[in-house]
Amino acid sequence: MQPQCIVLDEATAMLDPIGRQEVLSTVHRLNQEKGITVILITHHMNEAQDADRVIVMDDGHMVMDGTPAEVFTQVGKLRRMGLTVPDTVDLLYRLQGDGWDVPLHALQVEECADAIVAALK
Image (cartoon, rainbow, N blue to C red; front, side):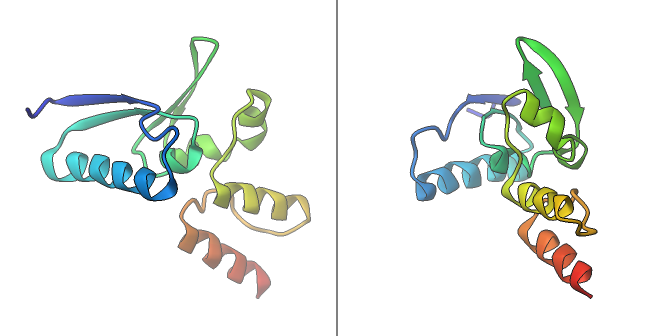
């Protein structure tokens, strides 16, 4: 089967880190190599940081819609809804709270590290 779209609801729930990575790798490969649209419903924000688009639902209503950087930089709003942010954004947010001049949009680990190194200079 080669559907145009696959919807996965909490596909990595209850999986160990290796199983989670295997599922996400397969999902990315289906999207990149086969052009299949993947809708991934998850509470794990680290899984959503690589998406093309993130939609945040709250009580059945769409409250945010944008790129991962556009959505995940709104840390306060997400936390008020009981959601988390990717680990990199959480670290940068806490550093900002301590007075560091770092951007919140550095979602990938390498970008986050680069932002921290730049702030140290």
